[in-house]
Amino acid sequence: MIKKLLSVYTIILLSIIPVAAQDISGSWSWNSKEGSNMFTIDLIQATENDFRGNHCSVFLGGERIDCNDTKDEFTVVLIKKAENIFQGSIRSGYSYAVGNVQLQYLPEDNTMLFTLKTAPKGEYYMPVEARLVRN
Image (cartoon, rainbow, N blue to C red; front, side):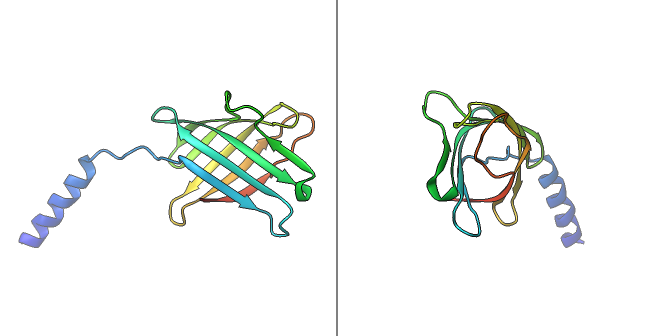
């Protein structure tokens, strides 16, 4: 009987404790299998559900670089849309055009799926899809 009451009490207690906002702040990276392409995103939390950051891509063995050329502006702007789902924009440092992205945090293996939903117009160098690991 005491075990049963303790279990009920624990369930009630856990259900009323507020859940903290998902924090994806930090540095995330991806390297292509052949090793000629790499991509990083550095994120900071702006508000409870908003993140800002910068990306840097080095493609074609260093022949093409798509990075932020100034630290005064962010190239990545994200808003939390659902649990572990973040959507927003990314601005190419190569063409300065803006595309739409989605990041899905996978807490079980502490990785993030990057998906370029709408590509920036013009020339850009970043993966269409990538599994990012936290550095």
